[in-house]
Image (cartoon, rainbow, N blue to C red):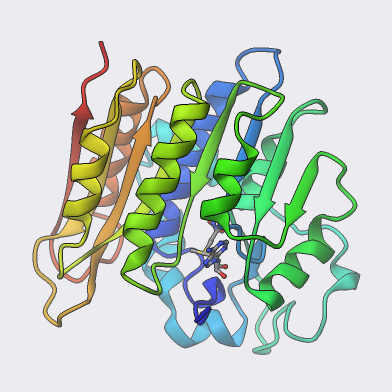
Amino acid sequence: MLSYLHGFHAGNVADVHKHAALVLVLAHLQKKDKPFCVIDTHAGAGWYDLSSPQAQKTGEWKGGIAAVQGAANIPAALKPYLDLVGRFVPENLHNEGADDGGAAGGKPVYYPGSPFIVQKMLRESDRLSLMELHPREFETLDRRVYHDRRINLQKRDGYEGLVALVPPPIRRGLVLMDPSYDVKQDYARAAKSIIAAHRRWATATYMLWYPVLTDGFEGELHQMFRQIETPGGVLCSELAASQGGAKGRMLGTGLLIINPPFQLDAQLAEIGGWLRNVVQLPGPATHRLDWLVKAP
Ligand SMILES: C[S@@+](CC[C@H](N)C(=O)[O-])C[C@H]1O[C@@H](n2cnc3c(N)ncnc32)[C@H](O)[C@@H]1O
């Protein structure tokens, strides 16, 4: 059932899109001294070595983070993310087994996943809750975060776990849901879990990532998110090619954001408009930004 391993896809176009938005939301939370908390329901292994056999096999990062790092005229809104990624070096590398640290024989190039992007932006009193179900990814992540007392990791279903964890004791915050969409049911489970959590913790920002596929499953998600009543609105950012051949193929990357912080729409428009000409997608790409539920 749990066949997905993010190591094959780390640093791809979808990661650039979602992690750039994640950094912008975290930067907004950092503007106030009051603590914030983040719940990351599908955490993965924490960070990835782009010289590993997995990453080398697909080479997806070449059309994502590598293309962006090598490009000119990088927009201001993308720079905080690129600075964080460019500076990222994992701690305690001596704890890592043979699968890490350049197992393909190349010089290791480390890419932070969502847990370590958040960890780098946490202050002393901020908190991060992580959930991960895959036994090996969980073990790896556990070894990487156990020494950080601001972080709580659970081997738990992220859909059910999110609803159980909210509202958290710290009431300012963000939920990131980044499922692997191994099965079609993930779309409905993701939407139902976020809608239930939002009923209990209405002031948080929620970010749901989804793939834009030739099958068009994301239409159902949009329908469900249009029904959400929330003062901060619901924003959709989609970067995708209009055509891509084979059935089931990924055309691009999408984000649904409930209660986005002030000016995130303008920042995502700037980033998306630039990325569409820089990253590698199956064909000429466009970036769409829509308010599914209008903010006042
Ligand atoms: C796309 S990856 C996460 C990547 C990570 N958020 C990042 O940005 O670095 C999805 C992860 O969810 C895990 N997963 C799948 N189903 C899950 C579930 N029901 N609850 C929690 N984790 C799950 C997978 O094992 C995989 O590691």
